[in-house]
Length: 453
Image (cartoon, rainbow, N blue to C red; front, side, top):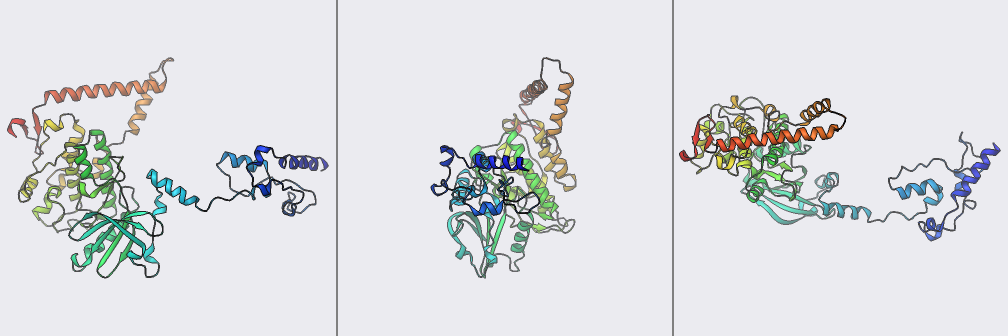
């Protein structure tokens, strides 16, 4: 017991002996503090069974959570708790500084954006938010950029004019219900709060700074095959989630696909659920809605109604427009219904010659006039173009490892195999592009030359 007391006393003496460099880390008032004059330390020293003892022992375990800061970790390890407690506290504006830095980097935490002002008292929209510039305007609503008066975060707010919506308000209710059901998905625009007033309804949503896909497509002219794959997969996964939650969007188009940032061309979210409808059964929808160039044939044919598969046709048109730079059905509004119901479209060699068959097959599967013949979402996501390559890459790497000699690493062999595969595919695609330069295809399988167009 005496030996333990001696060792403990030496450890305590060493821990209280600070170098000049260590003293600079502490406030001036604490540099002259000693353990012998502190009643707090004497009260905190306990034996292993919890009974107080007159002998002073150093605290062996701190109740503070471990810090990731190596400097503070070293301080905790070297000095007792009584000294650490006298360190200067974190500045009061620390969180404000963090939020400012995150705002500049465009990485504000989703949690920090959560608001629920409408649920507290009689707050109105104008009490909580300051309107700024207009982001978009339509016949029934207007979208503004707004700033929270207290939090200072920016949001997008959709101001809906209630009197201009349907008389019974079912469209507005369905839009709100849809966004509530879908807001947790990473590819959906998040609804954060709602203000309902007699003549107006305000939907507070997260602000996406990249604009819509139509404007980005106008800047880029078209997306290459790799970029198109990323967007197409995210779009179809978003639609799949909608249908899983029994929601049909019914207005899939580039205008309603928003980009998260200006620096990323493929990070998208699906928005604007003004035409959304609950899926209650087969062919449960009968209303003609959406945008003329993206509407599915069954909406024009009026044959006993239609179902959520109309979203797949619209997605096919969007993917075609992304890769080709133009829509498959172009004409005057009164001409489009006949063109769409016939289902004729072409892959012009001038614009599609550099693309492989995989994205074309995806588009062919989606743009089937008969919904029963149309590819399902599962088939599209597991198809050649959109299938994830993780498993295939692992198999190829395993095959490469089985054919190794001692002079080549597994990674080098796998990289070499990937390069050979890429070179072979590039050569085949280039060959076909040169051979079929004058060929185009329609949805019905007829081949037409460029001269016939």
